Image (cartoon, rainbow, N blue to C red; front, side, top):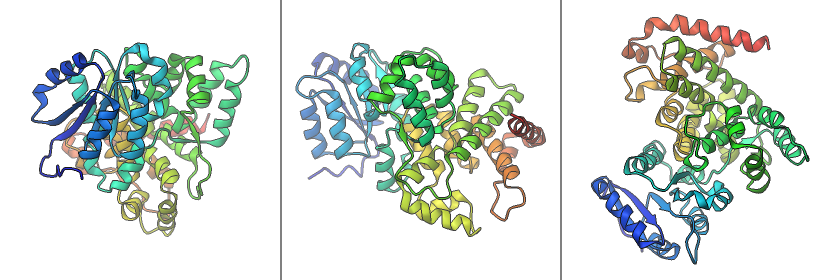
Length: 412
């Protein structure tokens, strides 16, 4: 019988490593966090599973290369038995092949040696949105999501290109850059410590180039890190429309941030935040297909917006579900916030211009223009939020930016 940990609000983290010296080092390094985290330490996968059977944990941080039971085998069992847990690998670069084969099992990868701030940030980022999802079922489903659904036509085109003796990197880059599910995954991977890229990458095309043909081929054909959108009644959802809207919001968000003379990192995060703000729709349509049909019926009746219907039927909107996944996958806080609060930015504590402000404004204006005079409830810009930021007077310019971006896309 598991112990009752409800009275202790600390995050519960289980560290697993077969080398006592390393485990002792982690214990010493993490000692300053004992008031924030309740930590346990296991020196094998078997011991870890025994501890998990006795106590509830929020996060497991495991080495990969361990005798008896490897980290990959342990994480596979954790995914099966405790799907709501966050799964983080803390391992060495020499174990690349094993980690590559386990990409779908891992939420985040951290490279040894790892300092306390990096590890703390990874755990906090992956768990701080858990309160947004009250349903254990939703947490479990999202935590098990290793890939997002892709357009079947693009998925087939990609696999066929990769099987050619002389595959074209330009063709592969074009395909992945046209699909929201694929783009999200390559951005996650290239910005993780696993691939060792020492700068922030915001472009899906650049992510593909940095990963390289061999890695992409392994991920797609062997690991099957992408999945096609099939076996689902997708009435009311067009992946193509979701992608086009997401790309447009990303472009508008980036242009708005640039107009505010924001620093480069913020501009890049505004683009990624806009690009990924609707990934939760893919999860709902593919993993909650029955509930999704009821959501679409309520939208079609004209009674409520999509996010409101999702809240009522599922218990969480695509914004919260998408943000939870992005947090699990290690995307930075500004990107996760942009996804989580793009419909309700006042729910976020931020009081300065951020990617959230750019994404919220871009999404609302784009929706407003796209929907035109239809009877469906329209997105509206949260003027109270802009007033709090002291940016109300910037809205007319931001509208002009969005209109111009839309005209440019229509002319392509």
